[in-house]
Length: 193
Image 1: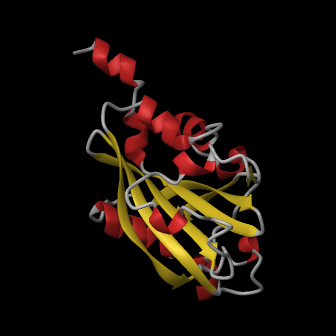
Image 2 (image 1 turned 90 degrees about the horizontal axis):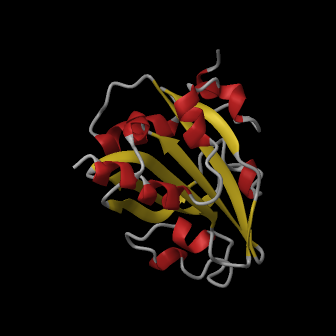
């Protein structure tokens, strides 16, 4: 196996192709806003922004956002946290060629969820979800580990989707942490107290 091949994830158009356990597959295939589902499964939801800055996109992202090879993007990484526990690592890239008219709120999100803008803007069109297993050697694997304090997981399940608004593309990758499997609907949590 070539060293460079470890840096690519095998993105698939069907969730079944990544052979995720049933409970994880349920999260991977969430319809609509993942943020809304996480809010419904926690008493306290928050977005912890890790960074947002200019970067070079990952090798397996370039084609998805219309670049012939890895190039300059605006990159945002966050942890989605439910009841104090990180459950999803979010990684978003926007080609540097996009304008503020394409994604007017992207630079001002701060610790707000990107999902709150994507799903309520009538100009946004959602593409097809793709799924992958993220293993050691892929750049997101080490970023997830660094953000979560170095957990000893050997792989993560992820999904990604390209969103379009006007002429702009935006790629959102969501890496699901094992803790997401412990979430229960918030009304269930209140009934057990």
